[in-house]
Length: 164
Image 1 (cartoon, rainbow, N blue to C red):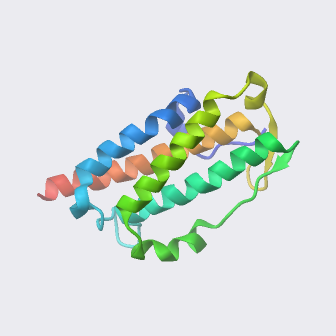
Image 2 (spheres, rainbow, N blue to C red):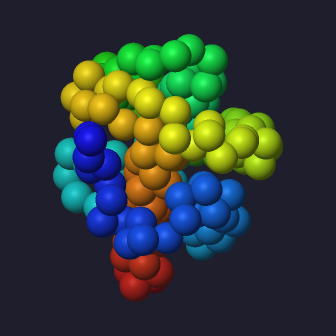
């Protein structure tokens, strides 16, 4: 069975619950960042807080599609994408707008999760890079990805706070 590259962020917790809880955690850290924190980054060459939010909105679109395709098709093969090819437009986009888009999509995705049958969670899926997975693993990847980027945003917010 394929591996979740973000498994260390989940630590045995329920991925569906993590996905549902993410919006509140994200709102809190974005509130801590404020508009002054949006252009800040962890290090040179890394994304700004606003760019991370744009990436999260884009990946919400990608996961939304993946989930629905996995539920609609038998033995679905996930379509991958190169985040670096999606990112060049991020500097011209607003982190606040990205957050609004992500939150609307996440509400829709949470409703989908709430309506799944037990068997849906075990539907087989193939990821070209990760191998054979289940729908549950797709949700776990999303949850871990969320937490990875949430941690980055929290570190940016903390650094901004310390810098005054």
